[in-house]
Amino acid sequence: MRSFNPNWRRFNRTRQQTGKRSDLEVQVASQLDRLGVKYEYEKRKIYFVKPSKARKYTPDFELTNGVIIEAKGLFDTSDRQKHLLIKEQHPQLDIRFVFSNPNQRISKQSRTTYAMWCEKNGFLYARGFVPKEWLEQHHA
Image 1 (cartoon, rainbow, N blue to C red):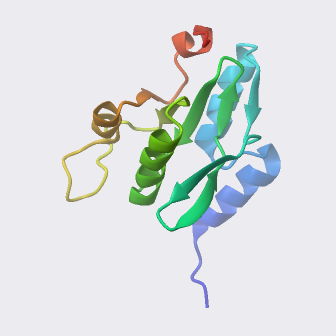
Image 2: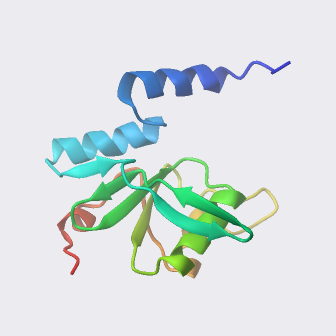
């Protein structure tokens, strides 16, 4: 039998009311909407190979300038591994992260934060909102 998870109701309510998976995604979408930025939400499927198994990745937000934005509250090991594989297999993609807290450590045992992981692995990141300069950049 499944144990009760109070966050499931909140997740389900957010998903039903907004079509977004998390409150942070709702916050990022609201910012983009307020600024009149055109984007697509979880429309594109990006296929990648996880050793011995083909997988697909659905970006949270894809701006018309080519920037892909992932809104992350929790950034667990499997997510980090996935993004390293995608970066390796699709180096042309410009994937950036918006964290609710970039200073969150990747685990209790580690001193590495989400921000440090991004810097080490060549990903741009922001806290809470999409920086305006990300919206203004143009890709070839």
